[in-house]
Length: 418
Image (cartoon, rainbow, N blue to C red; front, side):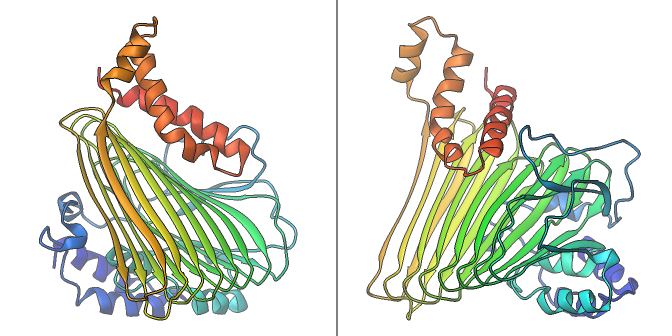
């Protein structure tokens, strides 16, 4: 066990509040955890040396005024968190929605939170257990049956100060309800965060989900998103990741009812020397469900991208349709991509496919643009955005799609290899 993990256990045992029971379970589990090393497949390409060197210290309020980036044209109920505390709130809670901060929950709300907390997240996620032990603030969202929430909910975590940040999001979407949730994170401070979200989708529920992990430089991110999808429910998830000294996102989807559908799109852009690791697991435990997952990455000079996508088709999951693709574009021959798409199939009446590619910009296409008077810098932007724009244009929220195109263009300019 690392010294950092020992400090996590000690800090979790010190805290005494209405979540103490959950903390005790988490610290007991962590006491038996072997610290991940490169010999373990799940961490083979993502060393945790930067975490091992840290001392546990919960981030306090930032001395600098920090606000979430503005998304022009987006009308949303927005909350920003800095240093484990709510730092900004904009808009009104949409009508029909139950919205509770952990720090302000009454006894009835605390009971609802405790009933859901940790029930969607698989127990094997190390940093999910760290979040269980150390979380000091969270958000509980409850959408009643057959309620359509037109206003998106935006939850932002800002890495604006040094220290550890542990935000939790719990979302319960009852049968026939519909909601959109945007989770985003920004910042470059010397920090560590374990942003964990759990979603329960009941029968015929619909979730439009976004996760933007846009941490850079010294901001370490080891977060996760977890979903349980019931009968005829619809999940659409769009993920965007930047690289930093350490950035990893785990995504889990478990089907609990037939005729459900999940579409997952992911984009990651890594500047020089950065690391981003995306692990996804889709559990097809029941028949007649559909998954389509596409992940595309642009990897800069000496940067390293890791993708591990696993689709597990259980024995009873007949009539499953599942597709998984990972495509990567290298800006330099010193860039590294470790990709591993996996299909584990135990049913015999399924249609499944998976694939992965790693390539460089085609010289003929670049030459064609250069001979027509287009600068090399602009030509590279055009070619790279042709590679990822297809996934951006599939985003259902036009304001988010337009904002993302502009922001990713700026990001690419900063990471371009001259």
